[in-house]
Image (tube, rainbow, N blue to C red):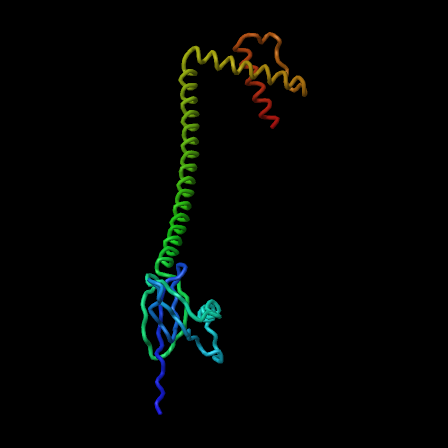
Length: 208
């Protein structure tokens, strides 16, 4: 005697932003308008050695449920199949794309932050280099100005005056530390002071 096996249906539907795929033996048009009734859920054999975590999660979610009412607009498709497959809960395409977009956005944010940091370092280095160049240019201009001023008669007098000041300071320092050079007391003119400065400089050079 041939036994007529009840058909098995694969039902795919959206629920809580996820894509559900489960198997059942009975599907009806519900008396409640806009719903499909699903009964007699079919899951894998409990005696199987390898347990599918996705199906196990689905089984636990529908544990104790004898009939489920699924909104028709949530149904993706219903297929009559020869035998049951593995039930699963998948991320919907929209959620998957949203996750990809978020990951891409995070990646772009990291790249932009790195580029901004690099640009900041370049600008900082360029600013420091420009500052060094400006200081060097200012020093060069100052030296050039001093050189031009020293080439004039008034400049020569100013140089001699600075040398005289330096000679006096050096003389005072030597007098405090030790008397190694004797200088005439009559050296009051600028020429004599400069000569004294040269004598001090030569003496200090020999001592060094």
